[in-house]
Each structure stands twice: as structure tokens, then as C-alpha cells.
Image (tube, rainbow, N blue to C red):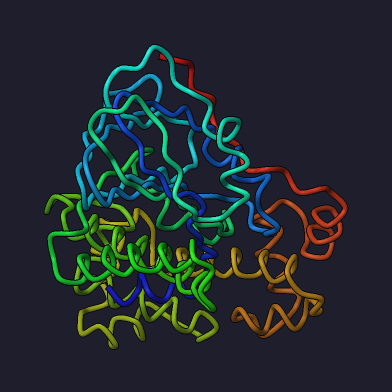
Length: 333
């Protein structure tokens, strides 16, 4: 799944763990998800993914309304859209607001926080990943609102789990460089979760994630993402993946519902939009960077995608204050 690596390297995930809990049943947290985490960040990213990773015991997690996902040690539960949610064990009288109740603890870093009714113990860490919503849409759009994956069943997952345990303890003790290690581990944990999810998709699944798993379409996507400025044609792409032009076009449409060149154009526009907002480079420079030999051609394509020319898009977006990541609010159980 090289294409996943290509996309994630472009998206530039910024991850961190922000809470280290040792809770005893019964307990339940009502989390506002991305909306609650946004106030803690100094990132310009406009999308936040929230996750909880259990290292001991058991728990449940749910959207509201929605069924409970049962969690055991070695499970991660991810909220790709940053939705508000519940996580707990047992049946307390009422959930507590996680960010309001534990704001001071979050500010203290990863020192262990103990809470609950004195019963069965659950140990877990909470984390987030911040990213650009346009660029991350390609893989996030295919994920459910709540995603549970067991990552500790294979050697790579057990290594991540043990590394997180060790690094959280080191960070709580303020060991030099430990916070940077934890940031990278949170990103690695999310990548491993995505890989496990993709591998477990049904054989008849379609969409970007299923396409990334397919040997032919995955290779085609990887080539397009690795070098989007290349003057690709369906013929040249088909030659690289070892398939006829017609069969590649049919297979690509089967998984992604579009032609390879239309998909490439859409990705170039996302890259162009990100470059316009994140840099001071000229429109002509950005046009060349994303595969357009003339500024005029880039302007036309960009206007079709965003309903305004690149210079106007940059001016309007930079004049607007960034919106905080939004999440639906859970009702108390």
C-alpha cells in the first residue's frame, strides 16, 4: 500500500498523545471530540482525528446515538471526523465532561490521572492527529465515523503498544526528548490502524481505500501521488502498471468512480489550494509545481474546482479567521 505512504507524507499529520488515564469502573467520559481538542492546539490544520488506545482492561465507546463498540487491551478506537462521543466502563449515574473535568490534567501533560468508582481498572491513552481537510479527504471519506481496530495481534502492533507504554512513562517523568517520541508513535499508531482496516475490507469493497489495496489500482494511485506534476496520460500510466489502457480505465472507474486523469486533476487542485494558503509562492510557480505548464491552464482548472481563480481564493481564505474543527455534540446518557 505504497499509495497510503505517499498520501500521508503529503498530508503531514501532526500527532500527539494528550491524556494518560487509569480509571476504575464505573466511569464514563463525554468527549466533545475535535471541538474540545481544538482549543489546545496551535496548529493551522483544520481537521482533527481523535483516538483512544487501551493498554489494560476493557471499555466501550459510542457515538450518540449509536451502538457501543466493546474495547479490550490492545484495541484502538478512532473518530475520523472528530465526532463527540462517550467512552467508559460500567454504568455510572452520569457521564462527566472530559475536557471540563480534566482540563488541568491535560495541561500537565501525560502524568497518569486516576478516576472512577474503585472497580475494574482500565488504562488508556488519548491522542489526536491534526491534518488538512482537503488533502486528507481521499482516505478519511472512506472511513466510518467510529472505527475500532485491534492492533496488538501482530508483532508490529505489539511493538507500538509496548513503545507507547514506555514512552508515556518517560514523558510523565519529563525524560529528555520523550515528548517527540510520543508524537511520532501516535502518528505510527494511526498509520498501523489504517493499514489493518484496509487489509480487512471485504473483497467486493470499492472506494479509495479498497483501490489502494488492489495491486493494479494501488500502484497506479501511488504513481500519480508520487509525481503529480508528471504529464500523465492513461496510456503512460497503463504502461507503468502493466495493463491495457482500456482495462485500467475500467478498473479505476470501478474502484474510484472516475477516470485516472480526472482523479489526478482533482488531486492537483487540492495540492494547489494547500500551496496557495501555506506559502507565498506565485500562482505561476504553484501551477508548474502541480503539473501545469501555463498559469492560464491552472487558473481555468482551479476556477472549475473552487469557483474562483487562485489569486482570489488565496486572498479570500487568508482574510477569513480559521474556523475551529467542528464536531456534533453528544447528549448525556
